[in-house]
Image (cartoon, rainbow, N blue to C red; front, side, top):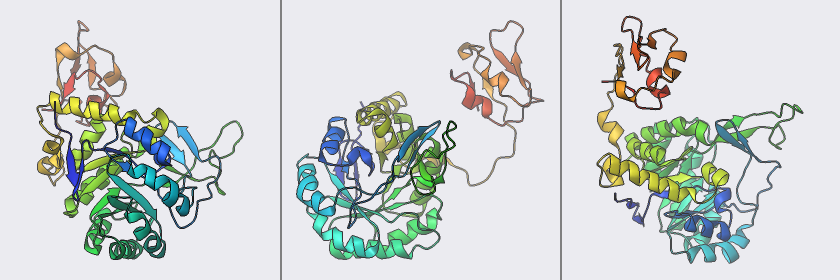
Amino acid sequence: MADLQVEFAGIKLDNPVMPAAGPPVKDAKAAKRAQNGGAGAIVTKTISTTAAKVPRPNMARIKGGFLNTELWSELTPEHWLEEEYPKIRELDLPVIAGIGYTKDQIRELAKKVEKYADALELSTHYLGDNSTPMEESIKAAKDEVDIPVFVKLSPGIDIPLFAKAAEEAGADGIVLINSFGPTLDIDPQTGKPLMGSDNGFGWLSGEAIFPLALRAVYQASSNVDIPVIGVGGIDSGLRAAKMFMAGASAVQVCTEAIVNGPSVYKKINEELNKFLDENGYESVNDIKGLTAQVVKEEANFNTIVPTVIEENCTTCGLCITSCVYDAISYNESRDYIVIDPDKCAGCGLCITRCNFGALKLE
């Protein structure tokens, strides 16, 4: 059985899967459910100096993803300090407390929250091209506390630039990505947006943003020496493994925990463990940063024709249907498919369409 223990910024976790700041950790009861569901640490829902006023409806499941207009906690900071944080602190798990958003708000909250947390996670939200507000927020928190300070970054920014700026400002770690947007979806029966915001816009999370999150984690971890925590579309052990390969030190889960409940943390850990065992890895740390070790910093323009593993082929026909080059067909006995090397463009789509491991690139 592989070792799932991780350590980053001096914080030790028995497993690397945590909730992300959001509805699954909206209060102490929810945090307890996350613990029972197998989370390796608790990341609390972000608070600010006032309670959030959240538009309704504010969450929707859509094909391939999830929309939300969630903000920070609807509970006041006073309530968190008096009721929620003390109970969460008793759970005997590392606690990363989410706070935001401006430097002044963070300065006001950081010291008050410190005694309940092992680290702070700063949410500075949707920063455009200017990293200065993020840097000022990090410095404000570092001036106030002696525990590690992580900063959560949004997609759509220059990841290497912001990651490096965060490191130079004193951040002890980076969390990325936040949800992507703004985005829009509409109820076809009424024409109304699914979200209750003033313009109907929301933010996209879940499965759809995983490749975006994976790229961001890879870029950040390639440009800084501080830990990177991956979040965005992680719903399986395989996706958690990919995050580690991209350079993550741990992962956070939000949408999957909303949709399928807190048992997803245990599920992801079990699947991650199975993946490591089946591939001969002794520890989750064995795959950390693997992609940077094998990637070639140059494009490949040579056509590589996939190899057909005949005994695995079920002749389901998915590869044939989606081959726009008409390069794949059944052989005469229809026991397996064949690929015409003169027609094949080496696009690779058929490999990702196959569910049975019947195609691979040598």
